[in-house]
Amino acid sequence: MKICIYGAGAIGGLMAAKLAAKGETEVTVIARGPHLAAMQANGLKLISDGQESITRPRCVATAEEAGPQDYVLITLKAHSLPGVAQQMQPLLGPETTIVSAVNGIPWWYFYKLPGPYEDRRVASVDPDGALWEALHPSRVLGCIIYPAADVPEPGVVNHTYGDRFSLGEPDGSRSERAGALSAALVAAGFKAPVRPKIRDEIWVKLWGNLAFNPLSALTGATLDVITGEGELRAVCRAMMLEAQGIAEALGVRFAIDVDKRIAGGAEVGAHKTSMLQDLERGRPMEIDALLGVIVELAELVDRPAPTCRTVLALLRTRARLAGCY
Image (cartoon, rainbow, N blue to C red; front, side, top):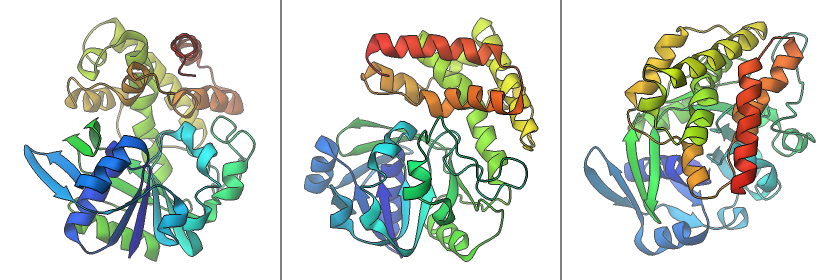
């Protein structure tokens, strides 16, 4: 099995390191800059559970160098994807599966979703439909990321929490390609269940991210502060309840309640969200995929979202002032 990880930062690096350590798949990572140079020179160092390991997956800068793959795991930030979709084409053979491990509502969300919105494009993440055409949803296998990790220095991934990557077909089937990838991830030491209703799980993950990330970027607070008792938790909870109403209007069912989801965020502890890390480093933030899309979908299903709208306006202003939007 040939697996390419496109965007081997923290999460992509974690997956690459564990897959390469197992040695049962041919792992290629596509990265750039000092991180790529460090991995090429010294290997990929993973720090997890107090232990360090070094693996040497194939590390390249372009899709042309990597060539066609069986699976392409996209672990980029959502806003980066439209700019590289065409560059990814050399990775795609006739049977290549694209594994969408991107936060937020993905470009393929309405593909094969029965009902009035089937095959609708999501303008917040795919404004001109280019992703739908270049990375057609028929190739896509959904993936939900649960681990937390960061890159403290080039060539090094620090894994701090979690080991689950849920998979699911857009049409809910239990396909051969989903089963094969699940088996490879399990062999590498991850949990990789194949879910029949992947969109329900997309929303449960997004449910926290749409509130935790923006509030952390606006205040500088870590997850333990946001989810603690007080005003930030109240704002967080209001945003999440608005989003729940939107999701349920789209047919989503939440297996847990809002307070349990907040408690799940609290378990991560004093963790800086990815959006806060991006802000501190002067990088673009996943504003539209995590929160702009909530406002778009609220209009689609005619549900109120006043708190989400207000936080979105504040976040966009904060990002513009910091040069991150």
